[in-house]
Length: 374
Ligand code: CMC
Image 1 (tube, protein in one colour):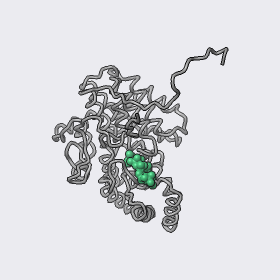
Image 2 (cartoon, protein in one colour):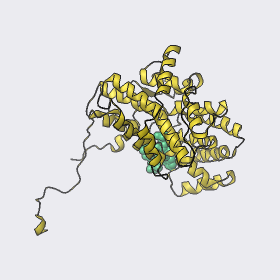
Image 3 (cartoon, rainbow, N blue to C red):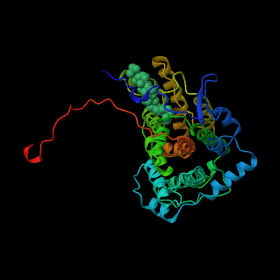
Image 4 (cartoon, rainbow, N blue to C red):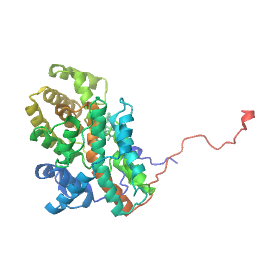
């Protein structure tokens, strides 16, 4: 009998969630019922992080309290800071993020406590410390002094400050904040499903987020924003773009930053991020990448009817902001920690061990031949 295999779990509904949904009636990704682009227009990232974790948008008082906790938890332990200083300078920052969260798990006094209250406290620590750990590595590998977080700066401002020593123009900070809002959550994507799978054995939140980071690193998932930049660097200038993309498609290449498992006629996050990409290009007085962007996008739609996903505009936007390419996916991490955590809490609240089946194609039954007779 041939079994009905759903490779890649294509089209399979495995659980319920209240965190997010792509709503067909508005053709948009929504978090707790709110359209992501509406949140980008009206909220800062901390409000959205609160929404994703707690289910409702915060009041002014709740936001103040949330920010107070986040800012207080930014400090890294001596052990973590020393470990980061000793990491190989050539490490990929995604591996640094993964290892840093793992070390946080070694140090956290509540690692074993999987109660909702303890998990929310641990989330705040991971959420606050991961950007600080990444920025420390950003500085160290360039031979620069680590910059301590500043408690009077917002989440986004502080990340720029810790990486570059200053907070950039407000348009740049807003564009970064918008990218974090757009990256914060996307239902049962690979990394979130990884986090939920790890959680389903009743393992701890640090382990689940460590696994999720490893999963996000891959180029078919979060790693695509870095690959987009590598592609744009290969193309070099707008005059080369048309030939480059046509050749790539002739050779049946997978073009990074295009296509999506859920959206088949366009990722609802792209128009918002595209608009902010443009704003950043204007501030930086550099239109080259926008021109390349438009040419490649047009050919992908005309020839393949494949539309860009959110990683396509974030790649060049982060580049123009001054970040090293291998820091693009770690930026995705510092945002997605919120979505992962909301799913981990949801999984704990109504857990069922995730354990699918496989169709066996190996040897039929056979007897073991002892070593001296093989
Ligand atoms: N370039 C060229 N062809 C593509 C692309 C692409 N980016 N995406 C899909 N296709 C083709 C694919 O070759 C296949 O063609 P055929 O039916 O002739 O074999 C068809 O479209 C269906 O694609 P699929 O790979 O079976 O679709 P999927 O749902 O399994 O994969 C995807 C979705 C995101 C893995 C895929 O579109 C892809 O590899 N994209 C490039 C990587 C990327 O940008 N990833 C970011 C995803 S979204 C945000 C995030 O998670 O970070």
